[in-house]
Amino acid sequence: MRDLLKDKRIVVTGTSSGIGLETARVLTEQGAEVLGVDITKRFDHVEEFYRADLSDKRTIEALVDVLPEGIDGLANIAGLPPTAPAEKVLAVNLVGLKHFTNLLIPKLSDGASIVNLASLAGFGWPQAVEAIKASETLDFDGIRAFMERWNVTNEGGRSYFFSKEALIVWTMQNRWTWRDRGIRMNTVSPGPVDTPILGDFIQTLGARAAEDMKIMDRPGTPQDLAPIVAFLLSDQTTWLRGTNIASDGGMSSNILCQMHGL
Image 1 (tube, rainbow, N blue to C red):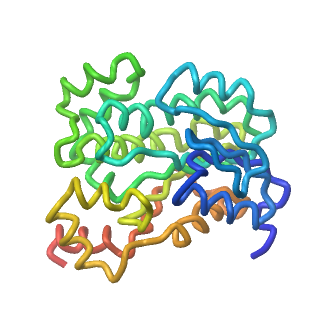
Image 2 (tube, rainbow, N blue to C red; image 1 turned 60 degrees about the vertical axis):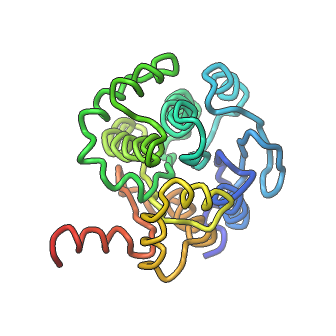
C-alpha cells in the first residue's frame, strides 16, 4: 500500500546500513519524512541526517535538543553485535536506547508509534527476570558494575542476548505508559539476518549458529524486516501495545515446539 506513512515525520536510528538503511528507504517510499541517526555519515533515504554516538549520554541529550517537535514515529534500530565490547553493547542496545526514547517522548506527537528492534536472542527473557529487574534503573555510569554483578559478559554473546531480553521486557512494561497521549510501543524480533554483522553472530555462537542456519531455509534480509517496522509505525496498528513480533523464518516457533515436545 503506497502512502501508508504519508506526511509522517519519523526518526530512525541506524540508517547507514542494514535494516536501518532499508527501513529508511521503505518509509520514504511510503511518504514519510525520515530523520536519520547514525554514527556513520550516510544521507541515503533521509530528509535530515544527525550524526550521533548512542553509547554516550551527553551526545544523546544533545541530539534530542536539536531534533524538531512533531515526531510521529521512532524506530530504534541502531545496535551493536556481540563481538563489540560488552559494556558498549549494553550502552547502545539498552541504556542508550531507553535514554533516547524517554527524552524524546515530549517531542512525539499524540498517537505516535515507537518500534524497537529486538532479536530472537531475546527469546529467553523469562530466565533472566531478576537481572532484568536489576537493570530497570541502570545508567551509563553503572554498566560495568552491573556486568560484574550479573555476569553479563561477551562470553557466548551474553551481553547481546541480555540487551535484547531486557528490551523486550521494557517494551512490555511500557505498553500503557503514554496511553493518555495515544503513544504506543512495540518490538520486532528478527532471527539471523543477512547484514554486515551476520558474521559477528556466527563467530560468537559457533556451532549453535551453524545448527540454527541448517534448520532455517535461509537467513532473513533487511527487505523482510523493514515492511514490518513500517506497518507498526502506521495508523493501522494503534491497538498493538507492548507486542513483540517474531520475524524469524519460524525459528521461535521451532524452539517452542522443541521445548514442549510438539
